[in-house]
Image (cartoon, rainbow, N blue to C red):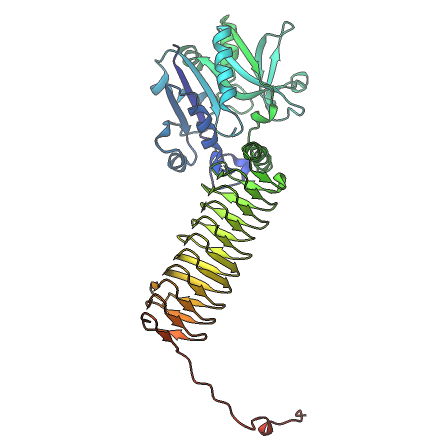
Length: 459
């Protein structure tokens, strides 16, 4: 079996992005662009993957971790020089090497596999992945002779008028005989408009030596989209989003308006779940079967059980168990755990708290840093006062307790099972089993107070 290698070019700064962030780290549907490329390359199980890093090298290594080897291009001297930086890892190897740019997040493993197979079938020393573009501006042009044989690749800056009119473009993906690649790289010069060492010049060098150079034309031009600007980033995100949404609908998820629904690539959704327009699902969110998520909801790294209803609410790094519901306009902040059949109504907030099964929190309340048992009623306007200005403190409320409206639970306190807190109370001490806590001033009514007030407006 012929060995396969992959080189990912990720050293460029991407000045047209006008960003402090390395270009290849700009996210598309929840992953950096270069992560998308690496993920698809990994599916072919190559013998080695080497990523060439330069600008923002440390951040790129943090994003990709140990999934790839690395080579460093300290100066941006062109794509040919970038590939040459991998010579220590790959120069002596025999086999096929694919070179792909880290700013092409839409390429798929299927296309990579077809490129390798075509290259092997043709017995070529180099194979270029090409596509037909309605507007080829910015891309290198594939120059063929009258027999259709690839003669050379011309960069936009160096193209003549006739060459610039060619619509077959270089996608920036190549497959090479590995040893022929590195031998040719040492012959590449920088006599061009940019003074750089172009990887595309390897094609001409191999042609001049009489080697076979082929070109595999992919069917879907959109896969080849290279991201060099914020506008291209938005375009790539739109295409990727359509792919993701189509996959979910194929798997039994109802998206009321797919074009107005943002779902990151790592999100998982169960069958018969319905998602309305204007919903955003990010990170590693997991949603079960038979759920309903309405317009305006935003979930990030959330874990949602089956038969859960989320109405126009925000959930971050929290979980909701089966048959629970929330909203509208409520917020689960990180580390919140909502039990089965829990009801959280409108304008509520939960932070780093656990609500046991069947507990109800109807409206306008805040629970933070607390453990609540089962079958608890939390009245309107209840506040768990968890912060003393320096530290957060924890409170506990037992099963079947009743917290009256407008009560303040000043942590740290414990309210036992089957206990009661009267409406309007401020609780600063523990409440024992079956007790009712009343902590409010006694009402005083002043007779004839109206008569003491002036009834004519002052001039």
